[in-house]
Length: 574
Image (cartoon, rainbow, N blue to C red; front, side, top):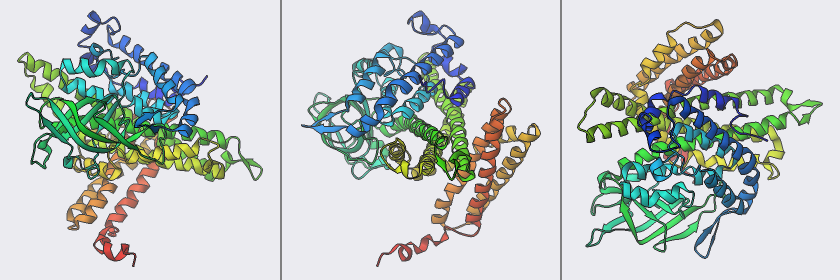
């Protein structure tokens, strides 16, 4: 009986290293919630025991219930029948099982019927569920929509929108993209207007909306007439209904059981969530959650692809021996495993900052209501927020790109068998491809991360880790990481000396790659001091990262990207 939590020693290892004491203390109101809710923990250890049990439950469901239905769900797909979206039979069964297990609102506050768990634990759940069925993740993984309503909305709005959400009776969707405004959200034009009584209505079209047929929609709309900037946008919520038509379901490459809809708002009644004109700022909060969720989705898909490749390599014979024993195949497997585990280290280290930021904000808001101002708390929040603004896009970029490579390498291990629909590798390759596109493409994520990278926000942390002494088998990797820090300074100097803005914009990717690899390397150094096996992960990761850093520097030195001025001559077709 597979369990995607207890069978994954690395995921359990990451759970054992979580530092959530401050977050959980604030989340549980210094454990005073136990006086109101029977399900609330009375101390930190009880909370961690509950989180572990919840992860075991999700691991069990993922391995034994969701995964066996995933292939049939993909083949059946979601369909539009008489204007209504029809989910695959297995998907409906899985949603019902999630609801029965009280997991559909696990991220949301208890006052609305939720489980009140940290985003870090929720992200682990997303990884496991995505390993089982990546399409199902998009139904489970939009709990951040409910989280945003709980955070920015009123108590009455929470009761109105979230009670059935937490019971699994309603599914959520984040409604952002428009036909001419994808990642460029500030150009959203969906119209929001009020009647004489103050009731808000929405009119216009949104496209590429995952679960756009959902029951609780969180929408970015232009509330201020004759504006074109970010302060003309507000956030709204509404229930799906007759005033919101599903125009079509996109015929996608992957995630067939997850409907991606075009929506037409025909004067649909809606409620303003939070402050007027602050919609994009509020959406960016939600996108922080979404980026980590998509990174976890990609990681889960990659984990399953690796396991399929590993199992195949142990069975497939070629030229008289298992292909597992072929160095070329073994090298692929080693890289895949190292990249997955190193990415997992990055994900669960950084998503803890999301939890900390959210809970510090809540604590400060509570203090303000009681006319208390804690300067140290405000300073801590400012530091964490600035760090997260860099880490959120960097993590999404790195992990989704990694997962795409792992899946296609897993297909390569399978050879021709991987290209057929008889196994699951073909589906995993289709499903993973969207992860480095939706919720912001990799190129947009690099742009989002590069400012913080150039400011060297993790510089003091890197220095603190790399100045320590370690065992000889760790020190060799530490020396390479120190060299990478020197390369970082050289990268920055070269970019600052170059007047070619286009070349600098493209070369920024090399700088982000180097910085992200250094961060991961430092995390692995600490893990290797506690776990002998992690020394092997550290050595392979840092050795390859160092080589890639040298390559990136050489690209900048020799001006690889300075020919962008010749784009028209190079790209022209006739």
